[in-house]
Image (tube, rainbow, N blue to C red):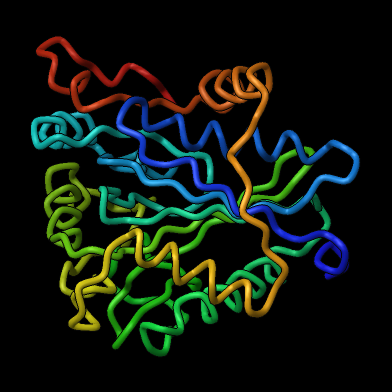
Amino acid sequence: MSFLVNQPFLWMDSGIYRESPLEPLSRDEALAAQMKRDGAAPILHLWVYDKALYLGRRDAKLPRLEDALRHFGQQGFGCVLRSSGGACVPLDAGVLNLACLLPDTTISIDAFFRFVTGLLAVGLRDYGVIEFGEVTGSYCAGEYDFSIHGKKIGGMAQRRTRFGSILQLCINVEDQPRGEWMEHFYDLAGLAEMEKNKPIPFIDGKTVGSIDALTGKSVSVADVKERLLAAIQSEWPVQPAAFAVDAQTLSESRVHLAERLDLFAFTAEELRKPDWKLTAEP
């Protein structure tokens, strides 16, 4: 890939989010919009959201989605309908999100997945052999799941913008009952009642794990960030940089996601309001 030859990746960590769960996605979108600039560099953007359900487009068809979101709001979860592919993913303070952004709209979907698969295999090698391939029964199951000892610790989804390509992934670092959460979510949302267009065929919470539980070591998100950077830098040019997007581009990106792509987002506080309704129609 020619973009790697003279352009090091910028490693940008934008921290932890607790307000609108659309915000980190807006920042990914703004970074992609800035790819139109001459000499734009590829970016690795890291962030954490505490805590929310990141829904896929297919989840919007669940017959009792509103009931499920209202219930999870009582448990402290916000929600957002995301723009990339896949189905619902639970995020919390123990999940590290990473977006790989390229100033390239011509790279094939498979080639982009293969590149990030290689990057992850190197970046997470301190934790053992990372296996790639669908983990049947896991939430948001797909060809580019990644796992340790057969249990899913993360997955990937892509999308293209006018000026760049984005591959977004999440890594379960610190242990939480995420598989159980998703079993309960899909039960409340009416997955079993659907005869067609199911977001996932079924879910078995026992198929999901985390780095710390599967390695038997005490591992934090901060640990994984540090090891990821060191390992990736051993193979590719990567330069830490302050997160930076201009205010106008960020504002335009929020509008684009919320209005043009019809994405909805609610904080846990909003979901807990007695009069809350899921009024957006994706």
